[in-house]
Image (tube, rainbow, N blue to C red; front, side, top):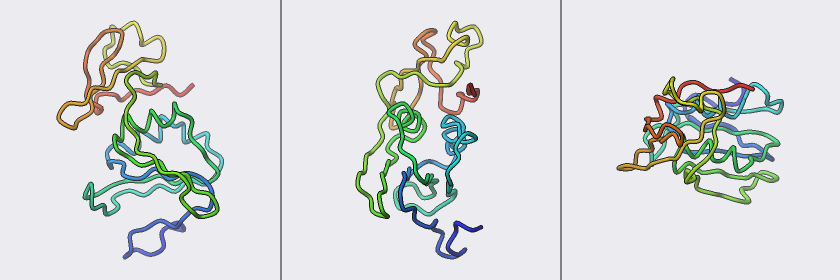
Length: 157
């Protein structure tokens, strides 16, 4: 792999300009990439998986060249990676660092798992609920609560 410096140091090369999202749980990485519509990104993206972390044990991270996230994109990451860090990189230096916390209420490109929910026709609005340091999502329309693992269907339009 071109982005890995070597197999023993378990690190991904730095980027010059862009963003780094660090401290993502491994099992949520693919959901985050799918919700960020990674298939439409034209600049280089480096993804790290099963990286060593003092805080999480094992973690994932995303490095995107020439990127800056909107608030909506940061909310997507925050829902699936509460406490992840969003770092803005300019000329190889971290110029801004932000801990991502789920917003009180946000619209996501996720279908509500409840097949009878009226929101399945549109983007669902979920209200993150933090219970014992675990994030659950409550659909604003049907008011059912779902674990993040239950949120599996994503809009691609």
